[in-house]
Image 1: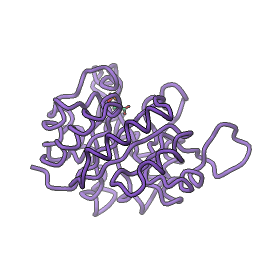
Image 2: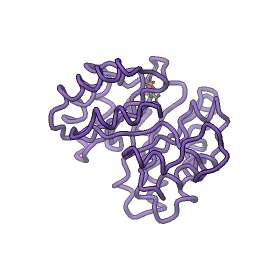
Image 3: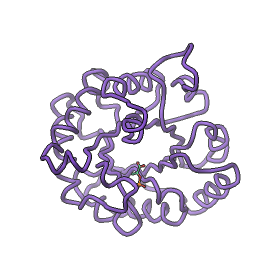
Length: 251
Ligand code: PEP
């Protein structure tokens, strides 16, 4: 059993509406009680203000899905860390594979985003993960280590303030989950890499993401180096998300 307080973060991706968000938050607030784990929802930027208000006074923390690598200026469409802070964001995803894949985010860009978040007092949830091809080529370890190394190098002594999410790209939104053993194996690699950079590596939450659901969460969360989950599809259904939170509390 892994006794650390776990973190369950939902990633709504580009889903939601004012009405749907209100219904989801209401159901989550009613169901979540006083959880023994930390809970967050990463919402689309236009809904930060709405969800900040809906979650006010609840244990549900607000997260953003992306942040600019710049502070301000002529970067049309970008949202800065300071803006996220204005709306009470506690976390921000950086380097989600969909950002890396569809928006060409490099390791250096992801590292710069993590730095900006930390400088604004927001915890970056740094996403790393290999594609199916990379796994089949035996490159899983080298890919995730390269991705995390860029961030470790950039944030220096703030390494222990990160959250890291291992999200195998082949498991995201596919219904295909890494086995608990596959996930634990990579988490152990990431933990060792963090331990080489900080004495507080055990304090860095390592989340697993990739088709986590109510049925598979307990087994994944029981692994010694899995400290929580980053949940996409299942975070849009209140009952599924609440069941994953319940699994985290008894893991
Ligand atoms: C994600 O978007 O981070 C994710 C893990 O998605 P899903 O749970 O839908 O695979």
